Amino acid sequence: MTGSQLWIGGLAARDLAEQFGTPLYVYDAAVVRRQYRALRRYLPQFEIFYSLKANASLAVAKLLAAEGAGCEIASGGELVLAQAAGFPADKIIFAGPGKTDDELADALKAGILCFNVESSGELERLDRIASGLGRKPLCAIRINTRQTAQAQEQMVGGPSKFGWDQEQAASQLAALLPGLRSAQVAGIHVYTASGVLDPKALLDNAQRTVSLARDLASELALPLRLVNFGGGFGVPYAADQKPLALDYLGQKLAALLARENFVGPRLFLELGRFLVAESGFFLTRVIDLKTSRGRNFAVTDGGMNQFLRPVFMELNHPTMAADKLAGDSARLYQLAGPCCTPIDFLARDVRLPALEVGDLIAVGNAGAYGFSMSMLYFLGHPLPAEVLVDGGKAILARRRGESGDCLVNQLG
Ligand SMILES: Cc1ncc(COP(=O)(O)O)c(C=O)c1O
Figure 1 (cartoon, rainbow, N blue to C red):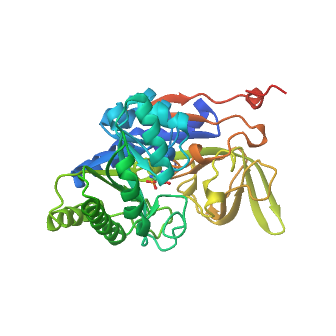
Figure 2: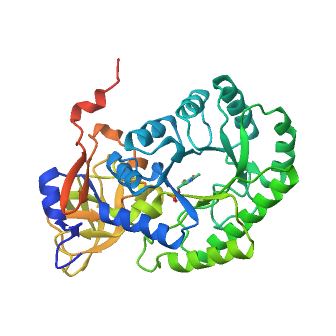
């Protein structure tokens, strides 16, 4: 950001909006590379897997594949995407609950590196399907740990659809291992939180993961071939949040691994947000302005249907008037989208310079869980376009949809 207008990868947001229309997602390739390279630099012991769920734009995925990252998928669709992006099968890991038999079979046929196994039932199914296909898949048992990296985390720690309860995992595995014909239990997977900015929380989590992996391997006399530490590395969304100190985290993790003499197993991290969030902007134009009972509303052409996260997470992303950065942010606005529901907001109570119809709004940190997590066909609006800016050039990565797209696949 320089001067009074927003620049993305050396191009003016205004020109991008003009050329490609709004609503529009723009991703800056240099930021994605910067994040990946920082991980390589500060955490060289770890193999990095890109969590495709954060942003499944083929252009972004290709970029990370070209950088040498691996890929973490969570569905059969993401397997197709990962392969199309150029991730080699031996750099793809399959995570997440509810993997269907077909999805498991497709991933086995593709010869992916590893399955993060969420339950004993899944391990049995995987083993059966793998035997039928003559495959010997590596498995990381996902542990639903008692402690998590974030106190408020809902995903794991208590009763959960994710992973094997820590206190049950060894006995459940001991009962299953003798009967396994094909699945190779090779290590564990621990993913307990997302958006963590405190290195101490991540270090504690890593320490617990090392101990758990060791204990389980020795109790079951299993060779420990890999340990997936999950990740959950965050990026700041609010002005008062500090970025994760990756250099410090890297030093401390290296010290932890040395102190524990933890050598031998491959060490994995699966990260989405950290790699791509800051690369992205959601660009949308003001189409109407009004004051209602003392509040200023700016209604934009893109809303929760195309960028759900602010509503879903009940927070504002960094939000700006892309051509008025130097303006006096004197007015309090409710930035509302075009959807016929009162919950449709891009940002609430945000201070911006006085807006006019046609002004361009940019919502930052939109590179992760933006397009991928939205309710894109709600109200029949067409999909927004996606653009990757790389080396000063804008590449259209996904065409804007059309109004008629709401009829696609409908036979009625
Ligand atoms: C199992 C697993 N791995 C990786 C991720 C990616 O998380 P993040 O984008 O916060 O790095 C998630 C997110 O929900 C997850 O559930």
